[in-house]
Length: 369
Image (cartoon, rainbow, N blue to C red; front, side):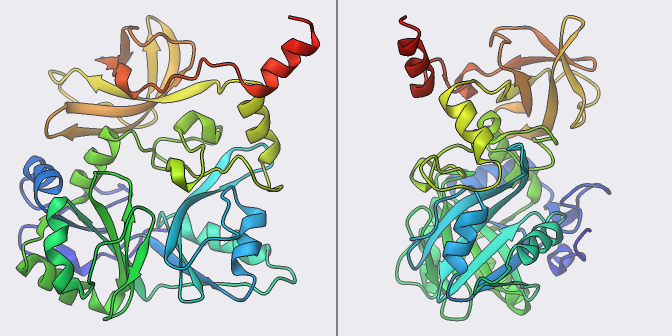
């Protein structure tokens, strides 16, 4: 279900994303997509992400209840704290990725627009007798502020300081400002009443925030090797493959030291005894190709399929890049192709995972090795 077109699309220069894109209801760019990326890294940019699905959970048991049915450790999540979280199926495969914030006796959750109704349906069905009430918050929207220049906007926002990573501060006019560890070193999400979207947009751009489209946000996300569910994951993806392992301090979405939840068996087994079959990598694509390959296309080595392509985009410094799920056994220097386009793995995007796990070492000791 696609969101209604954002009013920001009426801003002079705004260009809509191609039909069928997950981001077609918000601006794709404003005429200079590569320059917009630079602004988001070097100055300050504002990105309309109002197509995100927002919901709330209230009730005295909201945190302890969410803790038991999702992958993150949030029972003791403090006031003004945030975390990334996952809903997994029984086999540990990722169904939903979302960000949550505890503020003023309410858990605020935002997720992909097309997956929000499914997440809300799951949460509603799991309430049973708990004192927790999940509800859609369609009257709230998300915009992102990126770049070191966000520090110059505190007065316009009405806050006396910027929050730390995974911290949120209330905004006097309504909503809150939350800091995230990606897609840039200075990334903030402003969750605000939807009725304020255009007035806030005008205030912030008048104060120096430069409009940037979803193209800029996505390019920076890809360069940071951060997956987007549905584009860089498939129906077989487990958290270990896309670097979603680790608690909030590790910028992950799966805590490895918490009680039972759906899919925990797979998470624990792979962490302690096995290795994920695939891994998320950054690919550099041959820029001379006439067309960019599309998400979902197979990645091949010779005549052998070794992975699947995710988000493909042009980055202002790296050129054409993509994320891909590649078999873990494929060496980083392997020559790859996607359709007719040559591709190479960025070795810096590969997280080393060759150290023996605690469970594997214990098995070896029992075997006398």
